[in-house]
Every structure is written in structure tokens, then in C-alpha cells.
Amino acid sequence: MKAVMIILDQAHYSQIEKDLSKLNIRGFSSWKEVYGRGSGKGEPHYGSHAWPSVNNAILTMVEDDKVAGLLKYLKELDNESANLGLRAFVWNVEDGM
Image 1 (cartoon, rainbow, N blue to C red):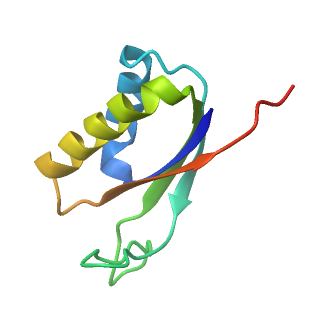
Image 2 (cartoon, rainbow, N blue to C red):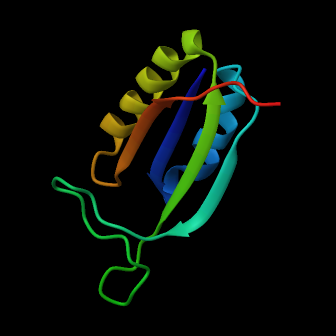
């Protein structure tokens, strides 16, 4: 099992939330108004007058065989609107309760 943390511009949120179901990924937790700046060329997302946009974050636990499809989908979405910012991070998790 993998944990996938998706950091996304707020403009992507409703689309990704809807498409997780299409990818047969049901469970997730999300945070709104996440502030930060990308490590490369990313524009700051501070929710301020100078930098008004904000990020959201989604954390989902995904079976190993679904990770590649999710990452492919996210990469394609990011390529459509690269200026918005979208990143995903994957790490191993152990099954819980």
C-alpha cells in the first residue's frame, strides 16, 4: 500500500476529487488553504495580497497497482495547466486497522 500526497492549486480541487472515483480510489483526506512555494519554478501560494492563490492538499492510501494510473492522470492534468502547480509524493505505508 502507498500513501499519495497531492499538493494542488485550489483550481484543481473539484476536478481531482471527482476523478479519484473514476480511478477507483475512494478514500482520501484533504486540507484547504495550504500555503507554500514550489522548489523549482513554482509561484508562491500564500493567500496574500501579493500572492493571492492558495494550495489544497489531498492524502489518499492507494493499493500498489493503482499508483501508476493515479500519477499518470495527475501528470497529464499538470501538463494541461502547468502554471497552476500540481505535485504528488508517494511513500510506503503499512496496512492499519
